[in-house]
Length: 270
Image (cartoon, rainbow, N blue to C red; front, side, top):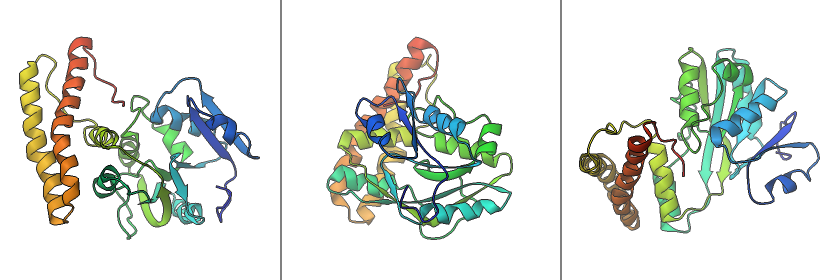
């Protein structure tokens, strides 16, 4: 953040119960305030902690694996001069594509909406954005049950329900430093696409749940992914598509099982 052409008024690092030296390293930098959760509480809680501690009305956020270009903040802030705009988000550029899993993420889990400015996107990606603190607090903050995915979709939906506007600014660019394995990318994609997805009632039989899940994932997930990869000549990614046909029903079954035995919805987590 020190390289930003528009310098931030304060820098907060929310350490969500890390087990490494994150807090120690961050605290070495002058002007950085580190706030630590004693245990991992998830994305929604970490974002609420940041908004609660922020001293200013405009609160910009970056994921830990995103590096902003120098003009990132300067490109986002002017959009909030419009009083109807409560949030703006930028474009994530993937930088790691060494493995098939990384290339699958780059192809199927893009966190950008292209090169054109959008005046009212459905949602802003959580990896990089800026919001009005007052608006976020007015709607109750981020949903802390969303520990690992979809808190960005949820907060955007609730803000837009108040007739407030969001803006996608492609000139505000950040570089993604994420590396995936096949299992990690499939798990992340399941959490992305199945947030809020309706599964069978806990009273349904396990065989009905599995059969329905396999059918849905074959008909709507696998075929769509495979067709897209075939059309783009991404033949090496077909293996990951095929593994997903087994992995997604497995995660659906786990979700059903927890609901079946606990009589309460699963908190989607890794």
